[in-house]
Picture 1 (cartoon, rainbow, N blue to C red):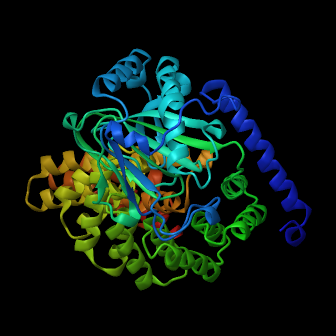
Picture 2: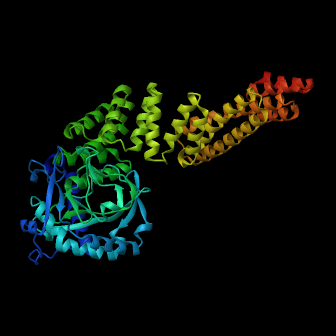
Picture 3: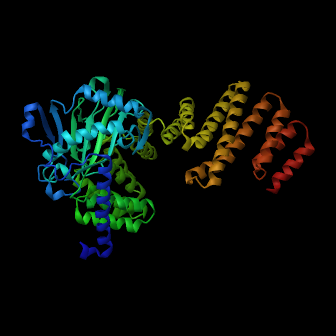
Length: 557
């Protein structure tokens, strides 16, 4: 491959080796590393069966792990779950959680993928880490050698990194579907099953409802590159300990090339990033995450046909069981103008992973564009149930309801959207429009006082929303959709002045009516309609001279 790709590839491979050596050395500063002269300290072999712990093996899916794929033979029964006697007792696990709580684990949170997780890294929990290091020495490293002899020559070559104690509850219920950043990974259950509802690990190729539940003290061990997620906890608290492992004498060239390519892509150098994905695929042509990352670059470059080819290759390799790939295919097809095929891809993705709020949101948009309002709103309902902070879904749901004449429910959705910072300004404009419609209906029913109050609220919301949009425009932080909303402000605000002026006229308060129409001409002096309204109310009051001036101004526009 060095001859094929040249010096740049060779430099990248050498960098992988340097980084791998550094990461392994750093690991030993924090986590247990078995001395190479120790004769492996502990051996885990089939005699463990005498102690009552056994294992059940599950399929890794259609493709082997991304690194060292040639070492893993078929069948790929590489997901190992303990059965019968646990690796540690309920009391031992409870003591670990007590120690972690004393170290503040309950009060920390961080973002992982699309979800906010509770918990902390063991680098920040030194007392908890002491327990884990003992387990690495006595149990976990020998166990990994026993379970994965294809790639682990000795417990002394194993290195722990990215170890965390995670807390799941109703406010931090789950993870998204992802792959782990290590050749090997483990998940240890730290909480008895009777203390929470839901939870457990699922693997996407098995189906989202096929959850591998583990009681306290049990573990799941696997290569890291299988797509999986934490199932939603609906009640109680569940703690798990997750760890990724390196192997000192094996450099993960595929993972490191892919990760570096992703980092380079984030910095904007798309061509150089694509080279890294190409190199990784030359080592392992079945690296599905490499193909997906390359497809996203091609999508950014608007090379839709090439991007589609890459994503369809992923789906072929994974037997169509990758919700992210189907989602990406939906985006690519949508950008290419293939709306029907896009909807099909989104729909298949939802069937695989109906717990993805962003996916449900995007499918709702496509169904709305197709005219399927019922399906559109069902997707927004699901999206906001999964992620109540997904402002775009609240906003679109309210818009769909308002377009159908259901202003009462639309009001609720826009109020929810106003709680979400990224769409608050747009929600204010939409809610102002809803209040305008309500004001007109109240006025038509003769309830002028209520109509006036509603129209006043509409005007205040429109002004507040416009102020926020102006600030975003000034800072350069707004997109095309924000600019479109900003452009709608003028017609909406002018309509609000018309409604308020008409309400005051209906109340025979012509002075207040004139004030509203004068404000309209002051804010929108180049709009003929503003001067027409002012001229009419002046004529009603017999102010013919002023009315003539207003009409002369109108004719100049």
